Image 1: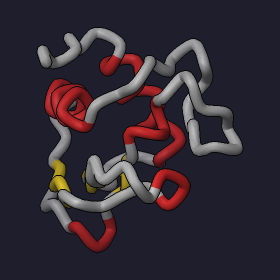
Image 2: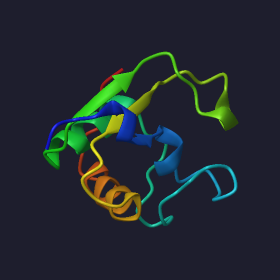
Image 3: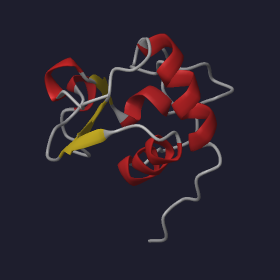
Image 4: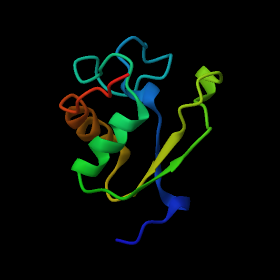
Length: 99
């Protein structure tokens, strides 16, 4: 499949943060969410799933406008309701980057 950024799914780190409520932007079940997900970890999870992606740096989730981690555009090869739990389950196995 050819990657088309105009039709790609948007992933924000807030979707996978277990400290957020659904109303605050978490999009996966609490048992799949992790504390303070980093964009680099989400990229590694997407790579492990073999999906194409594009990072848009300097972007901020509207509910966290001060936190400009960026947004990840991921190929639209499955419904977003399938993609998010898959990314979340792989994300749990990705090591946290060293400070």
